[in-house]
Image 1 (cartoon, rainbow, N blue to C red):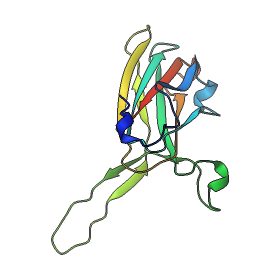
Image 2: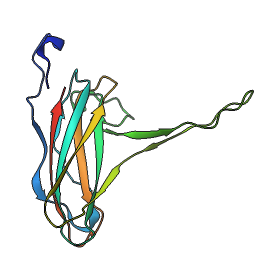
Image 3: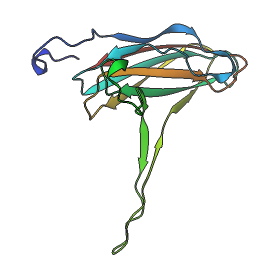
Length: 157
């Protein structure tokens, strides 16, 4: 739930935010070409709800959360990326007297349907860092020749 006391000005969004209008995923497992984006300036977290209807048995889809540190593309410095995908961190093994190598990689998630009917689930994320904008990209990853249907909404707080 949005807490107006935490903001000294109105936020640039009104919950719920539509991040993907219900529709078929792209053919051949391609990521959404033009994912919807929303302002998230000043937000500390987001709850994202997904509804997926598989296109065929073993249907599944991938999603990836992208954030932008910039309010508009014109503010992106030369050589920098406008959109930054989420990452996954794995700490290395700590041993006394030795440096530790940890690993960081870009991350995306996969959901595989368990039935033919539409299935919904929620994914909550603490943003933990100041961001300006947010978007979610999706693609069919189960049966890429028969893409399913996905709708994505979010509550930003």
